[in-house]
Picture 1 (cartoon, rainbow, N blue to C red):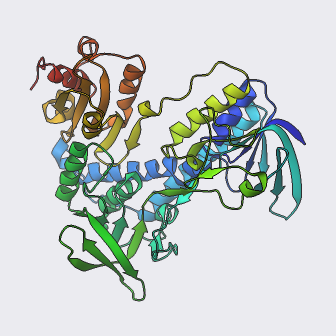
Picture 2 (cartoon, helix red, strand yellow):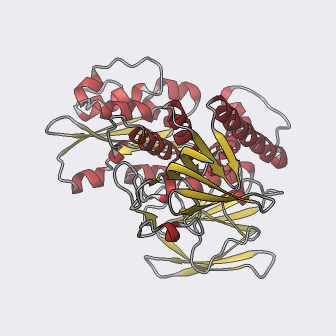
Picture 3 (cartoon, rainbow, N blue to C red):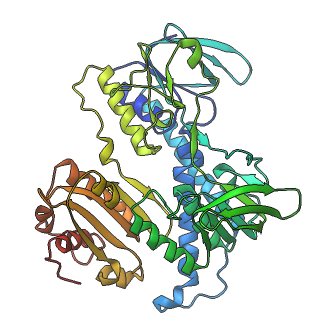
Amino acid sequence: MKYDVLVLGSGPGGYVAAIRASQLGLKTAVIERESLGGICLNWGCIPTKALLKSAKVFEYLNHASDFGITVEGGKADFGAVIKRSRGVADGMSKGIQFLFKKNKIDAIMGNGILKKDKKIEVTAADGTKTTYEADHIIIATGARAKELPGIAIDKKNIIGYREAMSLPTMPESMLVIGAGAIGVEFAYFYHTMGTKVTVVEFMENGLVPREDAEISKELNKIYKKKGMTILGNTAVEKVDISGTKKKVTVKDRKTGESQVIECDVVLSATGVTPNLENIGLEEVGISIEKGFIKVDEFYNTSVKGYYAIGDVLPTQALAHLASAEGITCVEKIAGQHVQPIDYGNVPGCTYCSPEVASVGYTEVAAKEAGYELKIGKFPFAASGKAAAGGVKDGFVKLIFDAKYGELLGAHFIGDNVTEMIAEIVVARKLETTGHEMIKSIHPHPTMSEAIMEAAAAAYGEVIHI
């Protein structure tokens, strides 16, 4: 069967690219070997947020007295929490089926292998092989959990994010390797549910080490206050799974001292690695560079008619970025005038509690780039809305170019800040200056007025601190 566009993979890059292609009048099909929606909808973005919401509700119950409310007998049903999360994921996957039907997109279920001359061979569950052809083929096969050398994920003793979302029982203790978004989100969830959690991070800053240093420092302080053990600048040397308790040997990279930590389960959360194996790249002749598919600014690979988007590229492994890449790719295919994506203006969000959100330069990166800076911070401790909501942890930090007033970066930590960061993305897209932000009236009382206050702080005009 011949199509205008064939997409290999139905994650947030693939399915969004397919829908946009169909909107532009291109006959489109998507090949998926597992579940529509890919990892994000089924085992990543969506079900994890369902788990985190349950943890947040439980946390509210445990602190109901802070709000003048007495709750008796509140307890967490771990199995029910997991079941709700899976139900949310299943519902979202069914939503993709509806969107495909609405947009007249064919969903081809099976394992796809790229072939020469813009073809894909699909092996169905029953072993039947069918070859499909298209003028344009988009590779959107995503990524999977990365494994550390010598610490293989066996899905029982050492688990990845998929297993962490569907454990049959709640472990009494867990050691999390890696303190990026995946690690800190699961650390918060399991700690809140009652598991004793230790987080081990190789990089010096500890939690969310790639965020601005002040954000990392604040989250470390808050997590330790919650009762978690946080070991930054620490390497995992080995994991002994021979006994009932797992024995993890870790080494402080500064002092050289080692210790053994016992736990019931180890969660490996050291990032993701692209799914490039056994999809036919070598047969087609598509170039790989440093473990990723090499593309140009409009996602053309080294072979004409083949494109790649999402986590198979060396760009940020983010669902919303994969979607944007997919849209840009197919709009270019359709002959539209398209601007390349500005990778310096892609927001990142971590949905732990408090949440973390950022976009643009960190303070260190801005200085290294040669900018003279004006920096403004506003603590949520001074926010009326935060005080009323009982969520005073965290702050907003804005970084401006002192010479021209350009907004170089923004770094938030606090309640619901992942809903606030888009304001900064739009402001940077429109090349807004600090004084324009100060003069943009924000509603009171809101968490978002901290953005206006932080801008004012950078210029010595802040009112409420």
